[in-house]
Image 1: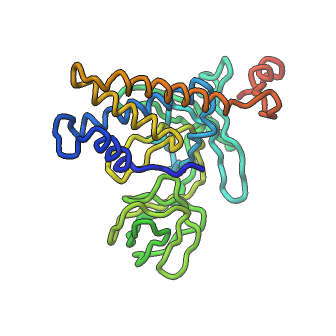
Image 2 (image 1 turned 180 degrees about the vertical axis):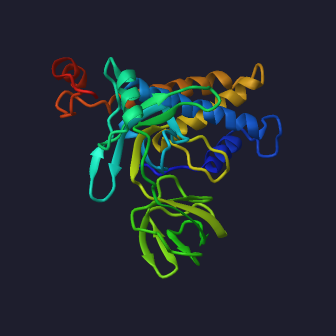
Image 3 (image 1 turned 90 degrees about the vertical axis):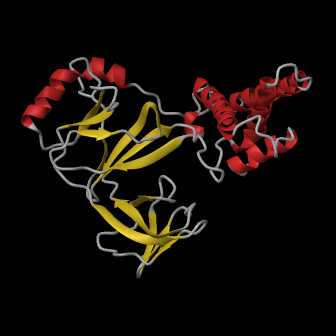
Length: 307
């Protein structure tokens, strides 16, 4: 497995190759923009080949509140691509289906009106561009997910959080978020005033504000490729870091009109771009894969199912 590179590693590589260490001709913002362009190219190729599940499957809890219908999408979701919503109360587990039938709006109105006591369903709604697309539950939620706010001391590259302000309400498997905590981190163990996490913190902090959330509803989705914001941020596509760096090199050279190196470096970039495309194409599943077929549309027409 390829190791992830930091943005500092790639930007330093580019500056060194172009002898830009002491130059201000290329600004830090420009260099970051070139990096983002290359990452977005790789991301687009992944989606073009429909192999997102090999790169970008993520999950995040949705914290239910009583009588609340609309919930935010995960902040890093790509194109509102939800794979599954899974309900888990401990005694009951099921997929929360998306209402898709022709009369889905009438069905949603009935569920809003009479609030059946059976399982939840959902639809996407987008009432305003400023608030974005929401997940709307039918019926509106009738329960509360456990959400605990606390503080603790984090250490970079460590999975332990020490000196917790409280452990009340914490359960192994609950999700942890806060400054320096990677997305999707869960509680692996609780011992005294110390938590062990499933992922190491990427920053050190004293009395860091943390939020622990029960995954009563867990959203599985396709995330966007990560765009670095700091030097220590990791770059998605570790196997294509050289393409990302080469794209940055070419864009830097293109800014200087008439640079004789541009043609040579651009030819190298073309080779690496083709390598990215061929590598990703080879990851496309063949016909021997046993992927579950989606036959819901046929079932809707034949058995009158709601979802």
